[in-house]
Image (tube, rainbow, N blue to C red; front, side, top):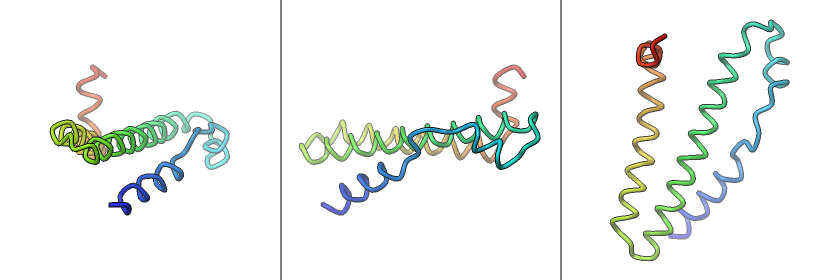
Length: 100
C-alpha cells in the first residue's frame, strides 16, 4: 500500500506549519472582527494536524500487523473529524456547553 504512505506524506507537507495573525488582518482590516476567524483557522489547522498524525500512526501499526491499535487510532481520527463537523453544523452547541 505505498499509495497510502505517499498520500499521508503529501498531506503532511501541505499542512500549515504556522498561522499568521497578520495574514488574517490583511484579509479584513477591521480590528474587532479577526478574533473569531483566527480561532476557527487555528482549530481547523490543529484538527488537520491531529487527523494526519492519527492516520499516520494507524497506518504504521497496520504495517506492523497491530490490528487493534490501528483500528483504535483510525476510530480516533474519525471521531476527531466527526466532532469538528458536528461543531461546524451546530455553532450554538459549543457556546452552550462552555457556559457562554
